[in-house]
Length: 534
Image (cartoon, rainbow, N blue to C red; front, side, top):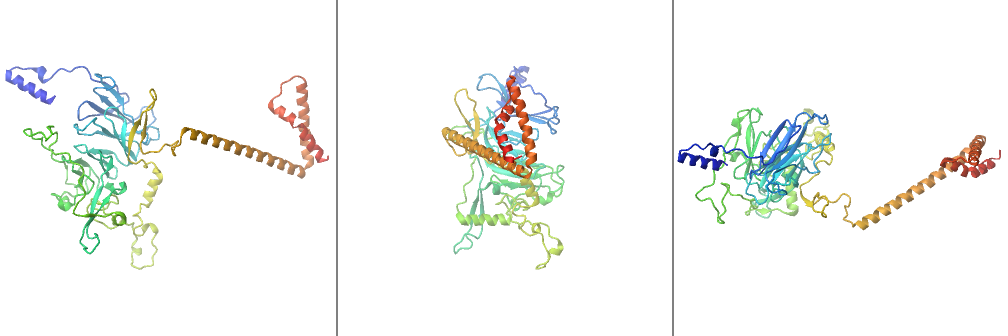
């Protein structure tokens, strides 16, 4: 529309006319509409193809009184509904069932964002972070809104997608700890990191350098060493910038740069000096936008027009001039890296190995009296060096106990199972086993198993009833031996009640089950009375 406005404006200028309709075309009918109730704020995000939009509504106070923190809803507005060609539609975005609900049973929506590349094949997807912390990050279909991939649950509140849409960072900024997970959207995996290990190549050459590949999610997670205020991808999708700026943070101002795989670029290689920004002298840090592609030679060998100035590049291959450690050697190297806390930033993070700089393992505070070498002063286990490196600190144990298995949702692809015609569709994870049928048994086998369990349950209940009956008889016999006169008096009273029931029966009155039971026990009572010998 901008280009058409420009061309219309130039045409009007060449003819000397003043075509207001060409510059400001009249508005037509609405493509789609959505009435929003109970919404104080609304954030609208257009898709990169401008054919759909996400509308995130929020309320600071819930008028129904069900939630103290208000409510949030996410809607997807489509210009053209595939089910009704030529008509728009608005639908509520379905959230994954794995998202944790709050105390009121609702799922809060933290953030949402589109994949920014309009030239990708197929429908442009979007990301959503939903649920209480640890929140669940998910990828959704751009037309149906259904979740297609789950990134897992963690303390995250933002998803930054690279300009080409290949890489993305799921981060926790602001009042969170600044954790970052670097993902390859095309592969659906966290990006592995190659760490060069000098001097441990083995053999006669001690200077031989090797590398180890980090693949575990816990080791790939990167935690910023300072509070994160600004964060964005570079125009070429190869580096990721995080900054601490003033006036949001008046301490530890600076800029840190990460590669697309989460490896931190050493400060000695940066063209700026972070020490000059301390403590509160950095106001902003942003990438210079990329120029538009060259219009004179704006096509590749296939004749397709280039949309970006920089090409879309996949992950770089492993370094060829180094030898890769595998097996036990790789495990030993990874254990050494974890123990030495090869961190990121200033090195005070205990997550994310393979960054810049090595720091000794963090330890708890030790009183001065206990610091003497070889001294006999007692040091508590929690204050001994290395005690906190295993994630067993009090705060960590309290977090694990509070969260339980809430953060156990790992990365997985979500597929839509298609059933018979007319049946409701079911959304399920491809790598998740069925809760009701974990062993993959057939329906007949499951039915036989249920019948067997029901039969065993009935036999146990019958045996329990028989045991209780024998216990009652034994207790009655013991009571008779202890005080026969008292027992005889009780039996006579029961026999008198039985005679009264017989009179009612002769008079034609209908007896209940309890009365019939007493009549059936008359003979046993008379035998017991005779055995007492009174």
